[in-house]
Length: 323
Ligand code: GFB
Image 1: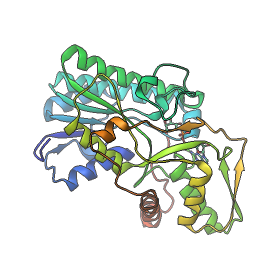
Image 2 (image 1 turned 180 degrees about the horizontal axis):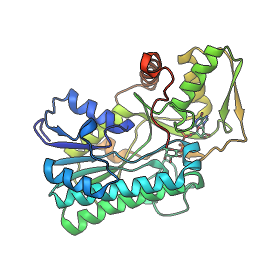
Image 3 (image 1 turned 30 degrees about the horizontal axis):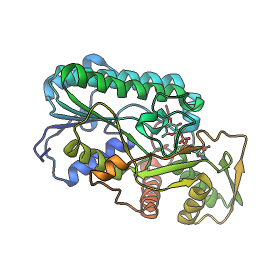
Image 4 (image 1 turned 60 degrees about the horizontal axis):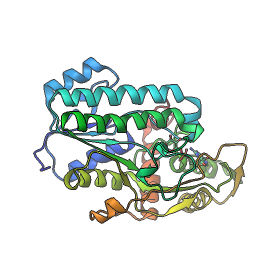
């Protein structure tokens, strides 16, 4: 891609979609269509078809579809599954019909079986049962992967797919109901510090391990893949960091926030998958690696939380709507 390529980021308001837009801006892309209010309602097939017919993007990043942390997945499986199925079906179909040759679809690491070889290799997809807390969402994401492979095979498109590690970052979902562990703990620990609480409850045992990646690094990898990868028959894992236990992550967040209280573990809450780490040698051997150290990424995430928190118009508003 060069800076004149007409690009559409489907889901420009999602964590990774917004990071993709920042990366495109940083690289001087001047022809980004469908930003902000110009993005059609992606659940509406007709609106999506019309948008593609009118704007004719040359490359599409499909980062759309609702997602959320473990609580959100437990409480809203139908909404998450349906939203993702609708959005990805509409975008892939309309992109093909408008002649878009290049697309990159972002799946999720929860598409891997609950119990599988670690770090997880793409060959392990579809080999065993999914983690029950996110089975519905993960099934929709798996359908998206196969849909892109099918369009590539049947119509000669290059509809690439990638599976990012657990993402976090700027303008994340900081609500306790919707957020993943890092943004949710920033918000809860910040509130506990303000209230002078002597402890905070961390959900689960603290033992599960996750590989985390800053959303801006994931966006960087997506642009790298479009420029350096052509095989649409299988997804590419996007990782490259270390896996950490939830207890270790909570300690790191405690340091950044400056919360002096105790961390307690509420084992009545679910752990989810015991370990999620990605085998990313394919991407790393192409020459990509994450740029942002974990500590820096945590600070940037907390700064983003504070910016939102301190903006007068947001005093009582949640950061991002809950499903
Ligand atoms: O980030 P998280 O919600 O997603 O939870 P998953 C990771 C771990 O952190 C779990 C624990 O063991 C949680 O119990 N945890 C501790 C917390 N305190 C908190 C908290 O305050 N909030 C949250 N959210 N977790 C998601 C899937 O699974 O991963 C999605 O549900 C998606 O479908 C995403 O795929 C990448 O990694 O467990």
